[in-house]
Amino acid sequence: MAKKISVIIAILLVSVLVFQSCASLTDLAGSLAQLQRLKFKLGTVEGFSLAGIPLSHKASLNDFTVQDGLKLAQLFGSKKLPVEFVLNVVAINPNDGSSGKIKTTATLSGLAARLLIDGQPTVYGDIDSPVEIPGTGQETVIPLRLSLDLYEFFGSQGLDRLLQLALAIGGKNGSTARLALDIQPRVMTPFGEIKYPERLTIVDKEFR
Image (cartoon, rainbow, N blue to C red):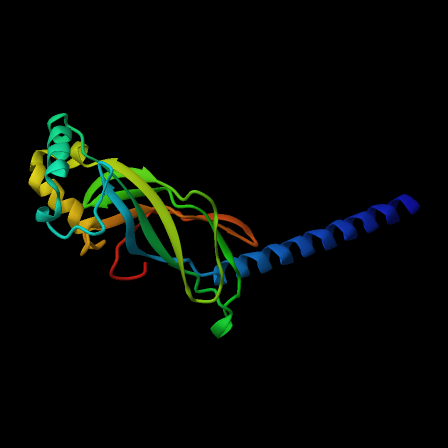
């Protein structure tokens, strides 16, 4: 009889634990369902250099010196035209506690980004370290350091057009209008790391 009672008690304890686990899982699933994804768009370009030549104060081909022109012509002749710059990505965390949302800080742990120029896929890049994005609805700027060889992807267009492309991106009047980023963010939340199931293409005109 005592053995039978022990078995019944054990079954009841297991049932309680299972019920509590199910309730916890249900609460977790509900919380995850309420979490909204981070929103991204392209910001500004900073520190753009073409073969070591800063472009931030150059607006046209006329702003290159004779020495610049000789250097770039030699590089182009050797089928190279390296550029380096920082592309600022702007993020918003909409989980700010308003309208029944969960207020939570998200930590962006990776972007797995690929840069597109004029729709042409080029190089991959990622953030240097995790970036905390508070649940305030305010913008957070995420610097993404990129380097690539323009000749590798656009060499057939000729030197003048490559210089104009570089100026359009990183020159005095440059913008990110000709750029896009194909990304697959990874975000750490209080519920663990969440990897976006599909890739996003972000541009400068709107948050996505």
